[in-house]
Amino acid sequence: VQLQASGGGLVQTGVSLRLSCAASGGTFTSYSLSWFRQAPGRDREFVAAIRWSGANTYYAASVKGRFTISRDNAKKMLYLDMSTLKPEDTAVYYCAAQPPFSSDPAYSSPATYSSWGQGTQVTVSS
Image (cartoon, rainbow, N blue to C red; front, side, top):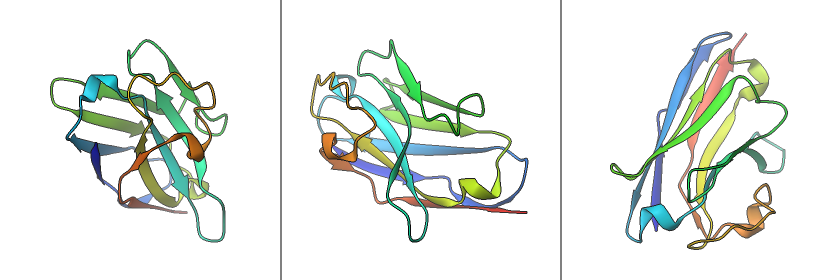
């Protein structure tokens, strides 16, 4: 599967932003999908995940309650709705897919993902 993230930008503290990730190739409904982010000088970190079945979602503690991950299987799209943005949310955001029908419990580990989008920059000014 090929992934392309979009929707990033420069925003002020407290506003909302939606990131999108378009998928092509493969069977979209077979992929568990996630968002990761990477700030300058830091490791890539897990943000949110949604299982291929859509039945389960998971969030990093730092974004729980502020971010919502969702998928539209008909459009082959993954979304990340971010609200109450903070300067510490500034990073390049990546969408990623696990191998088909994977239910790897290590959903927060980048090593379990086989496909990555190119990233979209989110900058939150204070």
